[in-house]
Image (cartoon, rainbow, N blue to C red; front, side, top):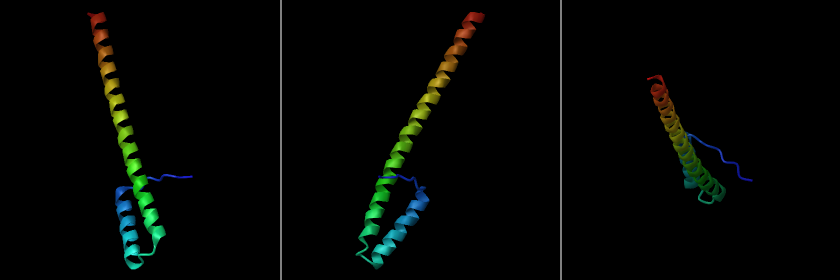
Length: 80
């Protein structure tokens, strides 16, 4: 089971630097390398999902504004 956890970019950079430091001292630390790759893959996936959701929300907001404006115009036609 894979559990994806979003890590803020600043924290991810610190974790990456720590992992690189460990690898520099012990090149045989293959588990650290595997976890670093997994974290990078999950970080990329979360960023992609975040961008997709943000775009959907922006589009929904724009549509709502257009709908509101259209409703306002219809009310104006009825009133005048």
